[in-house]
Every structure is written in C-alpha cells, then in structure tokens.
Length: 424
Image 1 (cartoon, rainbow, N blue to C red):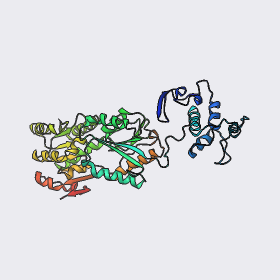
Image 2: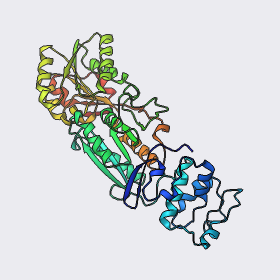
Image 3: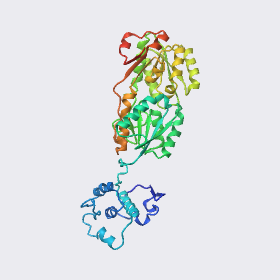
Image 4: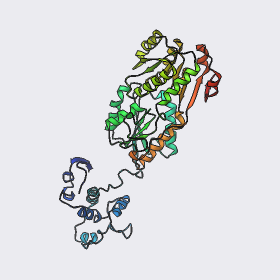
C-alpha cells in the first residue's frame, strides 16, 4: 500500500493529522502499514450498505466489488469465499453507520480511490475566493459580467455558491496577506484577476485550484508550465496573446502623434508582472526611434513626482502600464496627463472613460465569461493542470475625442477609422 503520508480527517467533530494508523476514534478499522492492497479492497467491499451514500458505489465498482442491485449489500471481492456481510451481521457483528463510513473511507484511501472528493456534490454550497488588486468600484462592470456568466452556468452567489471577496484597494503589496486569509477560510477555489493576484494566490497555496484572469504572460511569470499543459493548480485566461501587444500600443500612439520622439511609461515596481511589459515597450521604442523614459509610481502619493519627472525629460507621449493602481486612480491619472499635455495610451477602456486619450486591449466584459467557464468545470471535478490556458483573439481600440480636443490633438483619419469605440 502506498497512501499519502499524511491525512487530515474530521471525525465526529474532532480531527487528527498523521498516518492512517493514528486516525482518531477509528483505530480499530485503520489499516496498518503491513496490510496489503487486497485486504484493503476487501475491507471496502465488505462494508455494510447502511450509512454509505449512493455516490460511493461507483468507486467500489472500480475496485471490482459486485452489486446485484442498489438495494443489496456490497458483496465480497470476486473469488472471495468468505462469509457474506449479511451472515456476519446475523451473528451480531454489524457496524453502525459511522463505523461503516469510516471503514469504507479507509479502504478507498488505501487503494488510492477517493470517494469522488473533487466531483460536484448535489446540494453542496461551494465557497470560492475572489482576490483582486483594485477596488470593487473600479471594476464593478467587469465583476458583474463575471457573476452574470456564473449565473448562466447555474452558479448563484448566496445559493449554491458563496463568494469571499478580498480587495487590495490598489495596494499590490497587500495581496499575499489577503490570499492567506482566503486559504484560512478553506475556500474550494480562488479567482485571481491579473498576474499579481494569481502569483500571490499560487505562492500561498499549491493545492487550492486557482482561476487566473488577464495575466500578461503566465508562463514567463511562473504561473503555469505551458499554455497547453498548465500543470500545478493554476489555469484560466490571459490578458494578451503575448507581451508584444504592448509594442502595438506604442505603435498606435506613435501613429496618432507622428512627431513624437520622446515617450514615458508609467509603471508600478511593486507589481512583479510589469517588467515583462517594460521590456516589450522598450524594444518597440528602439525600433520606432523613440527615447523611452521610465516613471515609477507605487501609489497615488507618488503620481505628482512621476509626472514632474516626465515634464523634466520633456516626454511627448505616455504609456500607462497594465496595473491595478492606475485603474483604481483612473481619473487622477487622466487629469495629470491632461495637465502635462501628454497623449496617453492605456490597457483598460475604463481609463479612457475616465478621461484618458486611448486604450488598446481586449474587451474584458466579453472575455470574462471564459473565466467563469473554468470555475464551472473545476467545481464539477476538472483538474486545473489539465485545462489549457485560453488566450484572447480580439482586441479593441477606444479613443476619447473630447480628450484629444482638450490636448489640441487631431487624431489621424487612418487611426480613427480603426477605432472600435469613440467618445465624442
């Protein structure tokens, strides 16, 4: 027998951790290390039907147990000529419901067949964690799209699902602490929008399934082994088909202001995922002949200093990195960019709605439903390691002409013609 070395079971309100032989209140049924697999199978097959849920019969059949009908007692293993369960019960050696359940569980564990522990259980209310870096207000529309997609799949918060929300309020450094809270709450799954949240969740737990949403490059970030075969406990969707999308953003910004030769990128060094974006934008800047300046801001208290540094370097355009801090404070960033006369490219349409010039990215409201599908499949028994990561294929260009007018900028017609949405 090669069971897991350690096991935690809750029996009648108490719990114990250790080898099977140390299980509290069930030691008379616990297989010792010397018990063979065959004996463990017989133990499982010969348990009385009383107290055993109906879903347990499938794993018993997989062990080779015979059933003449669902009303019958589980029979002995094929070839076992020992006395039947009914015969032994007639001699007064019956097991009560609790003991029968314990013996069945131990027998199944001994041969590595869990009684559908990870399959959806009828009537069960699942608890999932939602770990997010920004504020709820800043992503309310996207969150509602996610909840709506869950409802369409049959999952309703407050009915068969309880969602534990944790918001970092734009403070990336708080994510590990919030992830640990969710793990202590013993959630069945964690939803993690953005790479920063997914990394915090993965670092905190290697066993709880994690559905990531919108990381830039999950392979480079160490979230998954590959997109086709994620491995581990993380899967979900990406924000881009690759970091090259950020080079495309700079190219579109350059087409909108052809004379620009100096640009800046506003980024948050506390976000471990941002360096991937930085490298891609810097590569694109070199190919376009643009001098690129890095401007750091870990929070709103550093925004003024960052924009002052851009003015000192005479930046003519700005790219804002894909980071929750700049989404939470979208209005403030847009105001500072307008004050500094900086045409700005963002990664979220919410920034453009808040007064930013343009954004080139996925439509989160459309794509977020795909993350809900991962939640659905995992709660129904699928393993994250076996669910390929999905990449977006459609991107949208959104332009705010009111902001362009305030900047004294005329967007070239070829760029305007490519826009999917325009704010007048």
